[in-house]
Length: 266
Length: 266
Image (tube, rainbow over all chains, first blue to last red; front, side):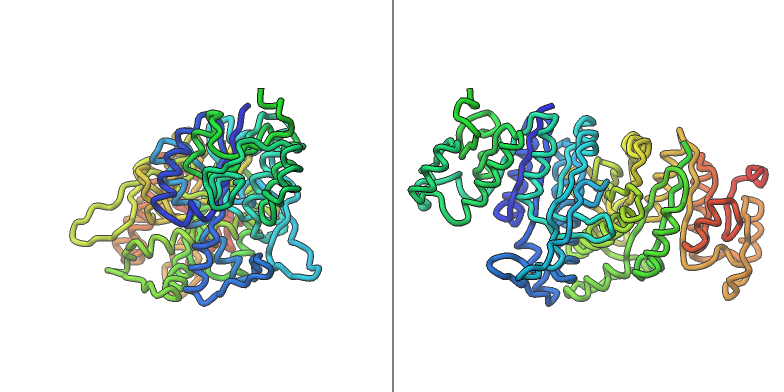
């Protein structure tokens, strides 16, 4: 079975018009597919309206009990169901889920070392049988960034990590492609020039681009994550703009494709 | 296949301790089962905190766009996922859904006659195949009171109606029992005496109790609804307190059982 896993972030989710456009493109994507989303900006906005201010440490959100309630409402309720209803209107049989639903993703509450992140989950196990069962029935899982510990506790979980863990879990038996949609057109040689995309990165090219400091800071964990997925059997990882997803799925290099070895392409 | 459909209301949902107790009882219920819930009180509370005041006409909630967002967040997000996570901790393979998920329940926006109820849905169609498919795989659907029109619009929908529509749709092929949990021990001869339960109501007894005005006002639509379900093939309907659900499922008359004809009991 060929499976595409697509992760969308705040730059798509937080703008209704952009989201609708993206969902239309997503509906045109052929084959089995899974959509993973968060919704941080909208959650922060609702939190502030309720008097729950976002707490960030080193750029990472602290999830106290009130914040957990808010992200559960906004990710698993509002955003997830709006996406599902829209996809249904495009005759896509979407089914919204968190990691708690059908025990899809079990995680552990992150242990407190120097920082207490609160109710944040690190993924332990993916229920591949359920995912396979749904995909075989032509259902499109739409997964929000909430998991559970199977002891009754919901946990806020990074959507990038959910996408890559689902991809590697499915890659054991299936042919999986992973697409990360973000706010840039891909990995850029010059951050200010959206046309300076690096079309293909393998490990040799990655090493070189890091040495030349073309790839630095926040892009490094993203790419490390991508290579980790490739090493666990994911076919290829793509990074680019949501609006180029369909081109990317047709093999047109409209973003950055990451492959273990160049010859994997042919 | 034998299927139990249980509807819980605000008197259980709005109190975390009561909800946990109920979910433990629910987890002990044998056989295939479906849980239906709303969450009105919590939704009103969140709405008020966000400056969206509940608007009621003749005791019925008007669902404007902001209210729809709030009920979607609270029912489909917060409450639904807390229930699912708790059931998973009891080793119950719960999967939370709205009517939009997997196109489970399609409804039409209620036409405006004298009152504009806003984004409120009247149920048109239940996806019995999906429900059957999930139940056969030992999944427990946990369904919040939100549906969709398949044109991209979510709609707030009465949880009692969802429970009875699911029951009648499944009753075509399956043996279905419907349990309505509410704030009283059953249909009471004396409203102030929780021990004055009418254990069994058939159509003859119902006619008599209405004539004697033992059954009146809000109880009449509830019972009409129950008889409608029975006429469409539902096996029996039970009305009582959530904490007596397990006794009721064992045939112990701890609430009011509604049957088409008395002899159906034996």
